[in-house]
Amino acid sequence: APTLKERLAELIPAEIENVKATRAAHGKKSFGPVIVDQLYGGMRGLPALIWDGSVLDAEEGIRFRGKTIPDIQEALPKAPGGTEPLPEGLFWLLVTGEIPTQEQVTALSKEWAARSAIPSFVEEILDRCPPTLHPMSQFSLAVTALNHDSAFAKAYAQGINKKDYWQPTFEDTMDLIAKLPNIAGRIFRNVYGDGKLPAIEADKDYSYNLAKLLGYAEKPEFVELLRLYITIHSDHEGGNVSAHTGKLVGSALSDPFLAFGASLNGLAGPLHGLANQEVLIWLRKMQSKLGENPTDEDVREYVWTTLKGGQVVPGYGHAVLRKTDPRYTAQREFALKHLPEDPMFQLVSKVYNVVPNVLLEAGKAKNPWPNVDAHSGVLLTHYGLDQMNFYTVLFGVSRAFGVAAQLIWDRALGAPLERPKSYSTAAINSMFQNK
Ligand code: FCX
Image (cartoon, rainbow, N blue to C red):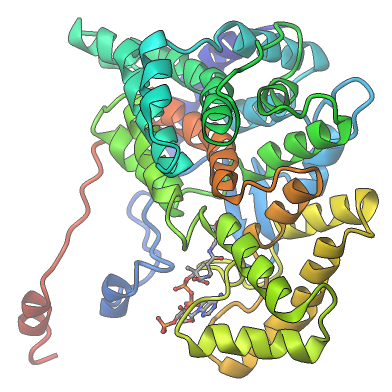
């Protein structure tokens, strides 16, 4: 069976032809008008990007290469004795559109373990960070610094032919993904522990090794949770801040480390990935104010206080989704299976019964339903990982999979520099003066 790189080399020529044919057939077709409000409104709904790994439907939620979350839970290879999909398989699917064999997934686990060491100067950068520096800032620093050894940057400096860009890009993205557990683990141990890190095991899967670095390898259920977590946070089509930023920066031919470092800075914002930390803080505050078992009416009032204070309810709403996020549902099902009695999970369920009605009543949010971030922290907390400032780092480890897959294809297909057109308010007023 071919390796991932060999399979890619087989797929790329046909995909170049497919894009050519698609553009020949549909290149001049219109999606409809662009209206001025979209320029002011954060470009909602503006068709502007190609992203092959996944497509998001407002009602149904995410599909990875055409497959829903339940589809991939069923189809992707599992760890021995496990029931959740291995993220290695999800990466293979994102890159190739194909379901890998167990053997191909095991080979990826091994390859990532073999590539996992980080340069000692990056370890030193992390060791010098004050523990008060947010884990996401540390994460971004370290990923950016990996550019020191970028195969793409080196090949470019040596004058690589653009036809071959995808090859060093592939090597860099494999290194990037492989090194993230050691970076995340080091940040975790430096900020919350004694800075000592166990070694990665060469014959174990990615999620097991990440759990081990965090100190959770002895809890098989937590390892399963990580497998699910990394799988479902990996990709959410191309327009979200972290994905789009990675693609944008990559379009300047900045290497995958620079591009994904930029993604992480976007993921660190409270309206995006930091929302998983914000949710836990918000729930904890609610608990300390209302006690362990508040009534629906108490929760309702607490939600209203948040809204009246001019704040968002973290974990609710979405720029594209108009239904409960299937990533939320997948995590809820995990909780129902493994921790139905957990008081914090019961609080999350109560919040789920109350918040949508309040948001509907308030009348502003276009989507009153929960997103992925409303649930993840409670699962991690259940197993003891209650260092909320760290949660977005785990989201970041996963998001690398989706961004990496697209970076490979962008370089394989010769995606051009991104450079949309901007206008000033004065220009808009003069343009539409008499229209
Ligand atoms: N609580 C309170 N108000 C909300 C809200 C929420 N959860 N969601 C939307 N609104 C408000 C908006 O703030 C906006 O108010 P304004 O008119 O005063 O500016 C109005 O409703 C319309 O916004 P809407 O069009 O529905 O939402 P956007 O596409 O602009 O924004 C996000 C989408 C996700 C940013 C928004 O729903 C939000 O702030 N949610 C809370 C933060 C969050 O959970 N983010 C994580 C999202 C995601 F899953 C991820 O990236 O990880």
